[in-house]
Image (cartoon, rainbow, N blue to C red; front, side, top):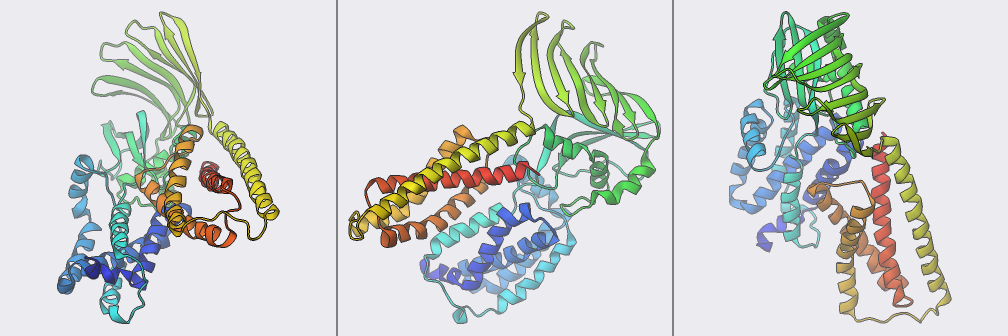
Length: 463
């Protein structure tokens, strides 16, 4: 198997794989543009055909032809039913329909004409590379980010030339009412992932909800879409002034008040038996002030307090008596916590670094911990995994940040790539001055990983 996979040691292939992973895990989210979108297609297609040609070296022409056809099908709307079935029954995957992505097909003849024997090959084991390549295929098709609402959000338009479309992963329902269209949104696609799905993030999505809905219903949404381009269409479909509507749903009916396209004013939800279930107030499409939720006895069971659209407090009642009050952290609270956490970790890092420097300077040059080659190599190879695991365990108790499976695997690989050479320098260059130094280095790198993760998390929630 190693012999068959040896073409994966090709420097062009490894460079393309690094570009693909770096782009999918970092560049797309930090510097999203049409360039990062096309970069994944070009690098991914190159890696895909090169990998499968290594697996089936005698079927090179077949691999390239099938890869081109599969790529065209994948980027077309015809693949949506298969994607929906796979996402609903196995694992969520997705892609953006954009025919300009077919530009990436130009990389196929380039990959085909590369002479493997004339390219430099790195002296590394191709089997881990093969697993990393398969991982990259899965990671590049992760589902688009979405926001799901506890209860439907509504927008109002004058009847126009758009209809309800099946645009997974969005969940819309369009109601036709006397020359008007009310769109109920249960879930909507967003243009980037968020580190913290709180009310502040929801406010950012709700602020342009009417434009987002129009864009999706017109079938034009992609991560590069400029929402302001739909303002003219929105204005042409806007009903001026206030509009009151009673909307019959499956098991309840909602009394809605709009100003233009957005909810503005009182909101009430009733059961089919005309019992009040919810009442509250919207302001420019945003939940505002106090919202009451009622039980079957028409008594308040829950009360939510909103300030500037962010939930700040929840009160629970039983038999008309307040039984509990929960304070809800706002985005500003989360940011303050991150600053405090980063400051505390920074102080610990400084203390550990100073202790290591003192140990190094106060010891004789020839006085260091002597270990067997096996012990040194074992520590260099195993400590990165132990450090990563310990850092994640600590983060789970002190941090609000979270990572999905693909991000965890990506962080794990980057940790090993960085720490293995650093530990080699420490063991063979700086040397351990006493056995306690190993514990100090372990804590230093563990806290450094936590600090870096929390810093990046803070950077994301500050946006």
